Length: 318
Image 1: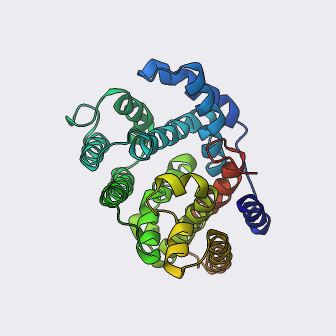
Image 2 (image 1 turned 90 degrees about the vertical axis):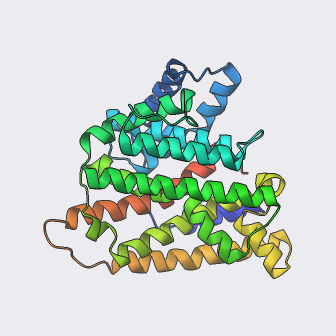
Image 3 (image 1 turned 135 degrees about the vertical axis):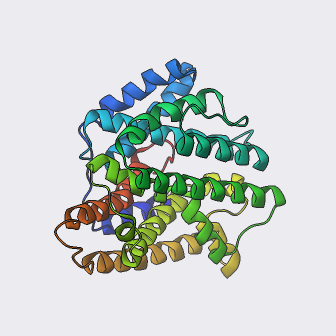
């Protein structure tokens, strides 16, 4: 049933799919690069990362990035997924360890690689140092600060979810939707559109209420789709942190009915997303091209997540 719903929502998605021609070569480059950064890959682990296709995910979100930039983006994506595995997989980090990771990552992003935090080292630090090199060199200070703020928000959400799981407290639907907007890392992916396109936005435009609303809807759409796809896994490991599980508990309905309710919620959100995206006014000739690139990036994040979820071995679906 889950597979049928996922494919139905994919068919209903009005956003055109895109994929960088560099995605597969970059995937091999990342896999070859990881051992040099101290992340040893035995054949099983290498095959798992290869089939997960993190570079293809980056290639769907940033289809126009050139190959060197897609390497940077795919390295960042790999870092975030490895952090996700560390925080939410078997033998996961404790909330205290997640806070230390957060502090260390933000120190690196805000102060540079010369600064170290005692709770953040090893291969994960080296991977982030490499991934951050080009954005730090090329992007303006306001963009670097905005990106670091997005990472802080994401890792804070990861920490809050870990605290709730440790306490055995399942969230309400309202609580979960708000928390999911942080744990999804969508808000981290949006500033990277500016890196990939070379069109940084001023803060006043980036944080315009209408653009923020569109970004939030895009975040919900990709997060809820992912929640349907990861339902089987999350039933065993998430402590109720999945929209389908939260809806089933709050409404008192079976999981099958909850899946349909979440799918209906997704369709309604998509209709609002399309309408709001069409209503964006002109910001003037100086910024309109950058705003269009940003909105296209948010849309690519939604459609890219849909397509990658269905092709990636990370979320096996029929």
